[in-house]
Length: 241
Image (tube, rainbow, N blue to C red; front, top):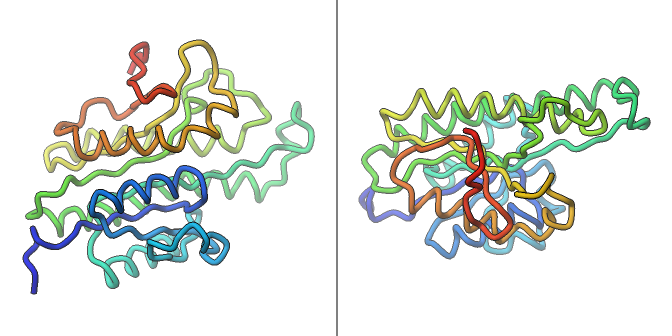
């Protein structure tokens, strides 16, 4: 049996898709990771997953998250990197009336935010199992600065709720597991001029991949859990966190 240090590290990306998840997965693969991509319907992402293992996971369902981690551990080994990229983005029929949103969509968004708690539980179990290995133990949530807005747009209530939950969880985890050198980040694309526009975001996958790899491989201490970066991949220096 190969030693812990000789086995390739494993990464689990939750929330597969053709944008950020796919680009991050390719980056991790190129860096020598075995990559598992998790989504509700892996067959829908098949064309983007030729180099990766597909795992069924509903990021809003605790039992599904646990089962997905069990599958990854059984098939590949304990992940040392977990990327939580799942998002629920549903707008109310009337943008000015948040209560016009169907309740199940709100519940799904809140549950997906809470899914970070379950995913982190499973990740920390794997991190501890892999403690002897030299590979960094890192959990990254694809963040959004909407989590920190004092007066969020009612049209984006679902995303705001989800990201607010995730941000508070990551803040707690980053503080709680520093002694074990398990690192947690809420990594958000930010803009120096105004809110990130859709065009910037849609072209940001390579930047996300670069920033995530810098956090994984080129950072040795936790630092700020609230990590904001610009479209050119540089750290957002004006952040208050």
